[in-house]
Amino acid sequence: MSSTPADAPSDVDAECVGPTSEQPGKSSACAGCPNQNACSSGAFSSPEAVAAAQLQQQQLQQSLSNVSHVIMVLSGKGGVGKSTVSAQLCHTLASQGYAVGLLDVDLCGPSAPRMVLGDSYVTAQVTKSAGGSWIPVYSAHHPNLACMSISFLLQDPNAAVVWRGE
Image (cartoon, helix red, strand yellow):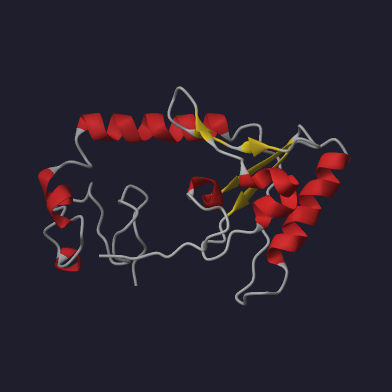
């Protein structure tokens, strides 16, 4: 079993030969891949695309250069207290003076903003920077505590997200 090359688009099959291979988009592993036409057209391997990918990688590394620790709270089961533990970790670390950010990726019932921001989560809105990136919502009680959640992008912050694919 081969591994997916680093230069491959994010939604490729595990057997992807990569857009910079000798015959991108023409391998038997490419059959049925949603990126087959783009790979064979050179859209991912042109000098412009390679330069854009390198620039994006540099920007990502630069923006994450001040992140010194990442704590991930996860479980394969729902209702075990992942959001509660995450919120308590955030509050504790923020009260100790650390700069803390919480990324809530609970797609079916984002509840972390309520626990991190209190009642102000209802009116909280994320904004975009001049560069187009999302700016998280900061706590009124802890200016060093930020939260980003899909719930900020919903019209009703109490609604569960229903995902539908095509």
